[in-house]
Image (cartoon, rainbow, N blue to C red):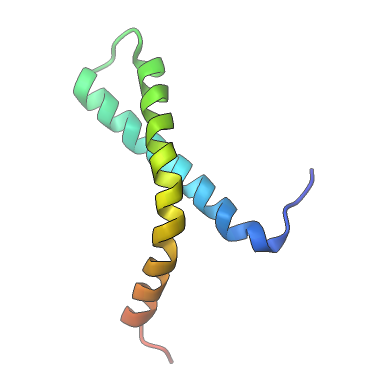
Length: 77
């Protein structure tokens, strides 16, 4: 398996994190709104892809700001 260069680690992290989080949130939201319908999985997948398309670029923009906020809140020893 080919491994990515270290400089791509933040991008890969954001890709995986946004994918997993949007998958869970879309699944929960779809289930709460529609229940378990015969086409639940296709509706969930469509919701997830839409959510991921928004979540991934958002994570890339927000992550550096969040890191700085966390550093400001945590004591540096």
